[in-house]
Image (cartoon, rainbow, N blue to C red):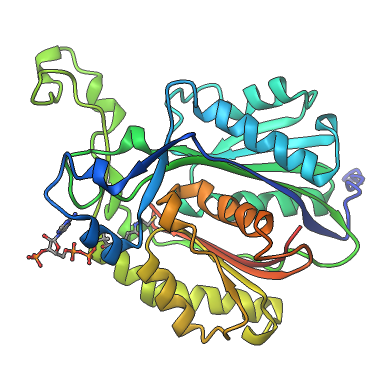
Length: 344
Ligand SMILES: CC(C)(COP(=O)(O)OP(=O)(O)OC[C@H]1O[C@@H](n2cnc3c(N)ncnc32)[C@H](O)[C@@H]1OP(=O)(O)O)[C@@H](O)C(=O)NCCC(=O)NCCS
């Protein structure tokens, strides 16, 4: 006879209890980008909507930025660090692959023996982490889960590539997900289109550095070994985002049973202002919906972009606790994740 396994006792629902963000102190205007590429402030602003971005200094590592954002999110949630039962860090720019940076965060923030792991889901990383966190809380594996998106994309930026040099920024955004008596995180519409995995990718796989003959290593003009960068087929990604992601966002609204005019806030991935404007139009979002346009001063911070934008909307009073918000992230993979949430 198969023995009966006792199920974990979870919460009926989960919600975002608190949010926190960290933006590096150094602000980089378009003028600085123009030292390396043939372009103009006007072109960058009109094609991407980006005016400035934050780039991390040597001390602002993925771990340090994560800790800052995590500390604020935990305080904002009104819990103590030892109540965190799991930490999920989504990042593509933490260059020490093992151990997971999440383990350092658990130790340094004082989260006891919380479960800790990193995920790689590009610019959908926050949505993927949120989906996992909700599952853990409802299933009963953790009372409170910290989800962080943290990136130093300036390290993966080829300053001489004029199709990407102006796009990326650094930062960390975090939320605490915990128990709720009412639904406050809707169904996730998430997925991948792996046949498009080459349209955004790292230029040089780490394995290429493992050569017997060092003269085989890719070199920069000054003779130093070239570090990988992110490259993308900009127009392909742009068209995919504009045509396909609006459909995914609509599916998330439908799955949550929320009509566009019931929405208070729209927080799409901050990649390009024209993509944001196009989605607002396709989704027919009414005037009263507050739209996150953080990309103007933050650039594309991949997994950090949605929680950073959420934190800023709440901190500036443009959104308020209890508002209903549609979130959608999309990027390298290609991967995507959309859901409707109640703001903390
Ligand atoms: C990168 C991006 C801003 C470029 O904008 P775009 O309108 O697609 O630009 P294109 O690549 O079609 O280039 C248009 C023209 O501008 C030129 N151009 C490209 N980069 C330029 C630059 N930095 N400055 C000036 N001109 C530039 C091109 O050479 C091209 O010239 P041509 O028409 O004479 O051939 C845009 O494609 C984008 O945002 N894509 C999606 C990004 C994204 O979301 N990525 C990640 C998801 S996580």
